[in-house]
Length: 78
Image (cartoon, rainbow, N blue to C red):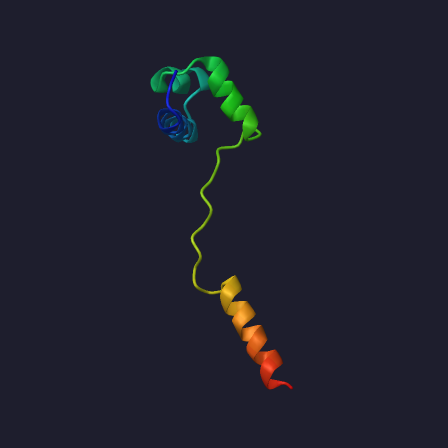
């Protein structure tokens, strides 16, 4: 049995191979998991390669900044 860290690393390598166009069996063999595990990972994401969430661009205010601005507007509008 693998540790959680090992399993996460295997899953990351699996998705890199899948994103490069590798077949399910080839990706599973390269990572060292059985086909059943690879199919489980693929089905858990609906068959789509998971994407990283984009980094905030700085264009929009964070929640704290919005709440701070709102509280100032309310305070000064009294």
